Image (cartoon, rainbow, N blue to C red; front, side):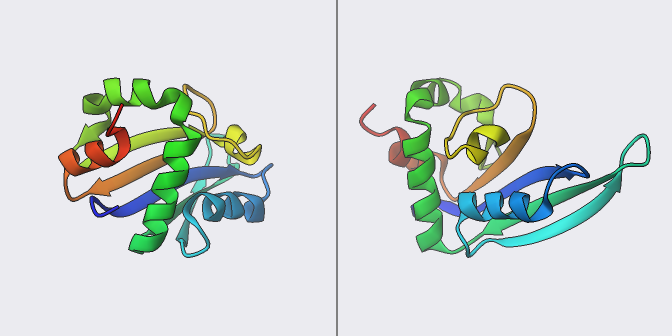
Length: 136
């Protein structure tokens, strides 16, 4: 995927969630090559909330991730193509995936609830559209 320069995934981990499981989920999504940072926040009632941010720059693994996303979201590919302009800003394509669906091994766009936010940094919007939506 020559049009993708970097992918960043970000999600929260509440005190009731297993940190290793959430990090594992990010690695499952972005491959084992993903680098992960964590940030500690404090919720309204003093509860700890961690933000995990993972990123990937390796072209081979980026290609794997994009292929998985394209296959996993194939039922929603027409909707993604239709609202492409609303999901892109400054050569960054934004997606929100349903975190619980990913735990179950599937891919689904999130409408609300717990999400994993993806930022896909592009070198070319047109090339990305052709790679993802070509032939549709």
